[in-house]
Length: 229
Length: 229
Image (cartoon, rainbow over all chains, first blue to last red; front, side):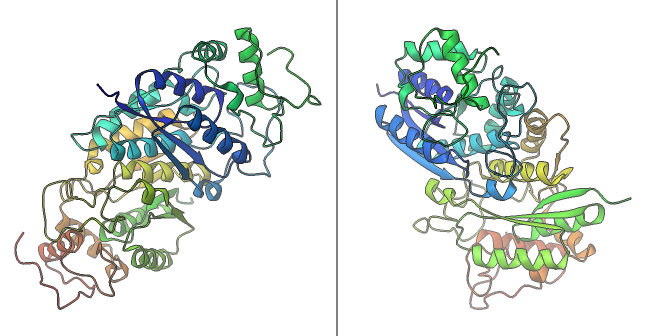
């Protein structure tokens, strides 16, 4: 019997890559990537395309959310806000207001059209820098919303298989699934090599450190590396 | 004391106009309009701009959801699907999968940035052609989602003041609030005059008939007019 179809949100980063590696075990793949004017978009899109090729995705959709630039309010888009270096438990300036609700809604919309039964998202609660829309309950509630807001014949469920995991466990899981981490991109800055200093790089480096494996990505060696969290 | 700020979703049609007329009683206005490649967009955008001017809106935002064209699956965008004439209780081909979730999410996102406390939407349950995302429960659940998915300091509530009303009551309410119906546009087709035959025109004509007032909009007189529902 043919595997069912899954939409997977693929940013190009390590979490979504591992969610994709999991989805690939059980589902045919429809991969969705967003461009919302983030500074690192060029690198992320390249990562997305290479990852999609690696997994021989059946469908691929690139969605422009240009309007997020107009809405602003986040340092991932607005170059006048500083991208923080180092780790913090505060909601950082890289937070895009209610962003995940928008991304997930698009995933469900596309899922309804292409006939997917699930939408995989690599959201992580504990290590996700305090973004309010990365919590398990957010997705539980979202599933209720899908039930209410789609055709009676449509049954799409959001799956967040990494939500309760620690970053080190995610790295380990991905290594076990042979996820091509060398194709992924996590750095918020869009330089030729990952900066090794932004929140996202630090979390990734710590993840591989915890997993006890080397990160196959190249980092800017002139950057100070992580010491302790 | 200064009135609080409200985001109002304004399509240019009669329902959102009446929701706006209500919001205007109690709130300062941030008006939001969407272009998603719908056939009638030119007329709708013109209606939006004239309505925004009429109400002297403090903020105005035009959001392009171009990607909905790529997702397709609806006759409002895909010219190869036929726009149905006449009324029906089936979910029509004009349904955009999970569209309102996307529109509302954008409204909340913008609301968080501009500091709004409510998002007004002119959704109508009973007369809304069976769209699954026009039900009260959908919005109740959405409010829970906002609470979970925004900053702890953000409190934005979706208001759907027309949700339980009949179309005739909405027309009456708008007339009482002196809503400029002559500036609005409801027709799914984008002709020089409203066609008077599509689902949306028929519902509007019936609404004014029920309210016992003439619709100030011009209709294509060569079109057959509504007889009985």
